[in-house]
Amino acid sequence: ILDEATSAVDTTTEKEIQRALDNLVQGRTTIAIAHRLSTLRKANRLVVLDRGKVVEVGPHEELMAREGAYYRLYQAQARQVDTETDGSEQPIQWNNAHADRDPA
Image (cartoon, rainbow, N blue to C red; front, side, top):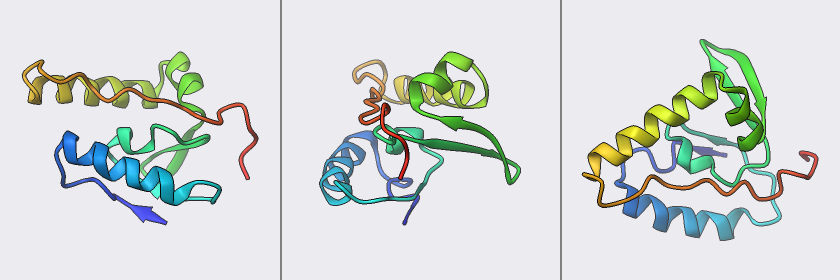
């Protein structure tokens, strides 16, 4: 269980931590809790909560296509990252590996 593993770091440090976590969670069921959505970029199943209730479930691409709560949060965070980096760094791109697999 990872609870806000990268919440207090800059985007460069987040990428380094994420690379290490990618190796650590390989082949394991992992539950990650995050407000910073880029932490979850490789998740095969995302569960979006609003006030303690599940409002969306699915892989990144599906949730983005719905343009619901997840989409709005993702877009807002991407704009914030772009603003914070003064345009010199692109927002973290999501790579939803294993989206075609059923969750374990």
